[in-house]
Image (cartoon, rainbow, N blue to C red):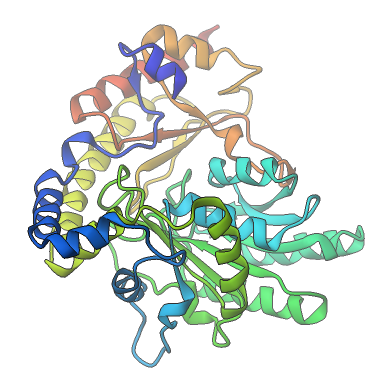
Length: 400
């Protein structure tokens, strides 16, 4: 991000931001006008709120889980609103983990969450993935390995981004999600409570195929799965409205942490999001985003086919949603420190995220020959230019 800001002439396929042109100015204006039309309601919105968040919005957020018929929904008391989903993830980690504790993560996974764990003095442990996300059998192998090493009591959670994950863009099928929850419950019964954290930030950014139920539906006792959601990718990152659905036993610890940190997330922003939902402005905007990002994804995949197909050993994932395309290069080409590709790519005029930054520090080894490309910010024209520049940089490294 710092490099992109310092070099605005570069085409950035790195930053995981949303498209500036898609931000919902008119919908937000309508919501704000409705709020401020009634002075008393406007004053409530401008006043402090309560720590768990604005109750009408929390009630509406339960609908975001899109639970199948017959699955008991959480109570409104289990829903906590935060300043973006990253705050929810941080609060959950503060509540669950002590320094030295372990969270099992897909390898690769969301790099900001790895930073959160590191800042808390906790350990990230990578579990092998494929084109369908974390492999349940590999999760069991990791737990068995840690048990053999005497580290199992340190394992407190399993972290997943099961919808079009950041960075690979892959989604976990329902059977795998259910298997992970079952594994967490089985090993919890054997030793101690292991939670599953479902980061659902990209769930609504699906461009093809059918939706998959939240992992909450596989947790019949509702004591294991934590769901983290956000409006940053589907409405506005500037409003910073995220949310979590927690098992009952975690509500008080998380709210105690939260109350000491922020005395309640921005109340006015919560009123805005509630108004957006009540006026029926949210889902039409999501449909608009899906169309805009579907076009960009198709543009990037077409450019990858055109520019990368002739490069030996270069492969990429074809996601069905999200904001990212994951690229794997030949083993001998390092995309980050230790290689020359990143510097040469900048010389050519393009930025990307080296994939090795997305790997946990322990467990499955980092793949230094990978990169994350984002199609969220650039135009289709710049995506095509950036992919051509990146291919030229890769060729220069291959030919060196």
